[in-house]
Image (cartoon, rainbow, N blue to C red; front, side, top):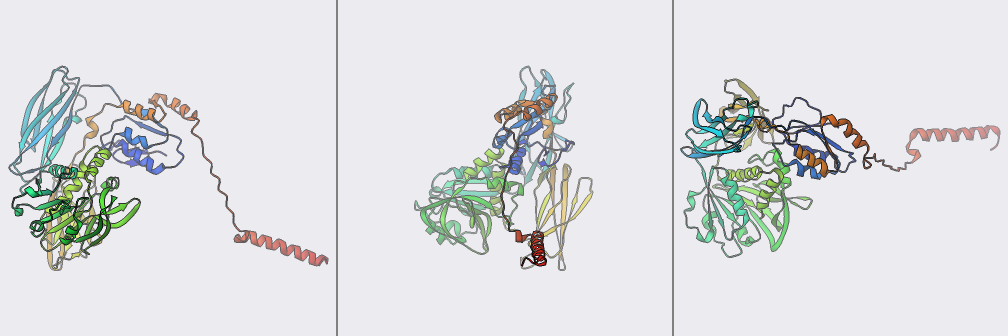
Length: 576
């Protein structure tokens, strides 16, 4: 079988080299999934060893049990090149604030060359700095701040002027997009005793400037509760004795409970939070998350389902769970290999606020697992921020609601979810929901949402990099509802950032699998090496099966005809 890989794996040989990213680890994961417990003689991979997405392929390849031969492609020679290696910035800011930007610039063979760094917003230069690379100084870090003056999606171009003789100029520029808002949510975390979960939650929320997070030991909290949009009660009420939570649960502020081994479950049940847990205080089980694919309060992304399934278990109370019928379950509990219908992460709503329950502790391990799987924290931070955003945002009372990502890479589809309500605020999807996307040249792209359950879904496909606006319309009875917004498709130039082949990692992968790395000129030797291996042999399987002859009508008729012929001949000869 032949496969191609870029940002995803294709079951064919593609020679266009049109992929926007290279995820070598996904190839090994795909091969392991397809050929697990099968007799694979060898795997041959032809690549330059450069990857810019996913985990380190050396560790991903460790799960492959077959010999892995590598064909080293590309050029390892260094040429004169200036590389805008990394642009770090806050993706969210508040209007009137300043946000930091940090650039990491690498230069190869550019000693004493002069260049210039520019940051432009449309045609306006908002930052400029001359730059010179001295002998032995191939890296430079530049830090500065920009003003968040305009509400909405602000697109900036970061440029490093090329130097004479530079061949690859594609890696001299990157774009950054900052979403500027004029409002933010204040989050309060209360706890009885410190725990790594608290830091994991706080750091996830602080990865977005949408939130201001305050953290207090509950016995020391003396602030007015009404200035917060969400209260997170970590293992409260607690067995240590602090059970007086009426100040928080009786207010109109949304509350997120995180339960654990020090929670007083009798006191928790008395709060009428939407769920009652009857459990032995010392009885806990290790429970993994199992994503509810019908969850509709916010999107989780199908690409994250594999990430969630690999998350380590939480310590959850072992017992019976009773919860109200109006609950929305994000994760069920998976105990061992059993997928139960017990809620792990669940949300409730009443007339004045939202209530959420995470029925387990050690969620900080999910954060560690995210980094182990993807070498970043984006999946965990996104999950926590979506939970917090849903809990903290005031209820939308409009009859038409559209949810969508405001920033989408150009290699990913633009997806929308829609919800339409009647005058009684009941979900309906009888009328057609239309949407028109317009680009910067005012060209229109009309779509009609598909219907899913009682909501709407639209996959508009991929779009070129640029700014886009949309208008969604639906007619309910005699009323016409409209919703408008904007989103940005960001360009990916990661393939041009690093063009120097990494043959070292190919060599390490091959040697760790008792195989070899070869160059294109040595393909004949590669075939000889594979054919000479003693451990690559076909496997034969023998299966015995017995069946009744009477079950085959033709054999039955043949035997019957032979018996009948014998009887006829004997009868005719007078033997009988």
